[in-house]
Length: 107
Image (cartoon, rainbow, N blue to C red; front, top):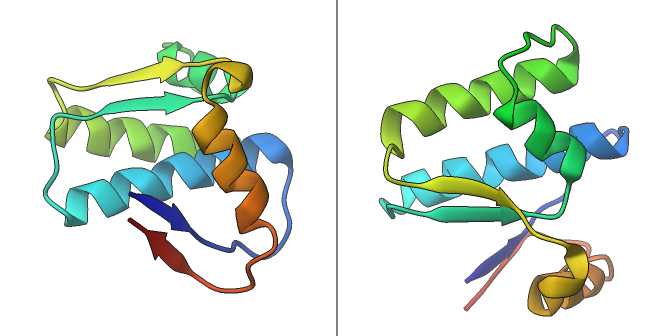
């Protein structure tokens, strides 16, 4: 399954990626799926997720909220960094989603 969503206003890339990861976590939780291996191509998001350092920026707060939900419901799951080139399907879906002006769930 894949899901497209639009966020406004436009924000910096790392905040956008963090919001996307949080959105996926909330979606997976609503579907009662688990355990889940989350893969993302955003190195800065992954580094912040793995860090014990407290980031008090908007980006850090999003990651902290993600960590809280993840730790509470997904103890047997993982979050992993994957190079964009290694996940061609996701990359193509992301490119195609840019041309859609509405929310979609693709099966």
